[in-house]
Image (cartoon, rainbow, N blue to C red; front, side, top):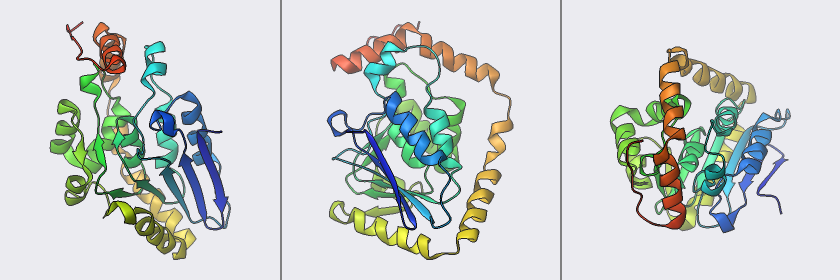
Length: 251
């Protein structure tokens, strides 16, 4: 069975993370399939895309076992997230459970996030000896602001969906039994709106939020890559896989 399922049905493009045994952790195949789902141009009938996940967890982030075997170089997750960000139509994420690290970014790159009260969002990279790229940090700053971004990144602890909703980081909050109904109501409202207006407004938002992309950051990119290549990064991922406390040495 495929780990990502997607189909267009009338006005709605449905995308489903379907790797429940691994808490929907993103491996290379899933990233490629998500990229394909959001780069295939929508038909004239389509108005909105919906991203859901099977099982109790939305997405636990990147597959650490696969990442540990490929310790160097950036993940293709950035191109996939960018495809979601610039998808011509609104994208609604339905977050029924935890969205951590890459799962957090996956949700926040969507236009609307409908989250269960039991869900948590977070970036645990500092606890693994890793660091987010310029692209990933830019999205956090856009949606969360500098104060909350510091808390998310530097502490690395998950934050309840209720707190993010109160701060305006996610758009909708629902009881666990009501998440799909709330999400479907939003999808239907979007599908009833004028399609040319939706496309133009989505393009406006994407273009006007792109100003940080033009800030010079080659030195930061090199620093992040050094972190990814570090002994601490290898130790952090090995410790997480072994479910033990890491021993970081700053090298």
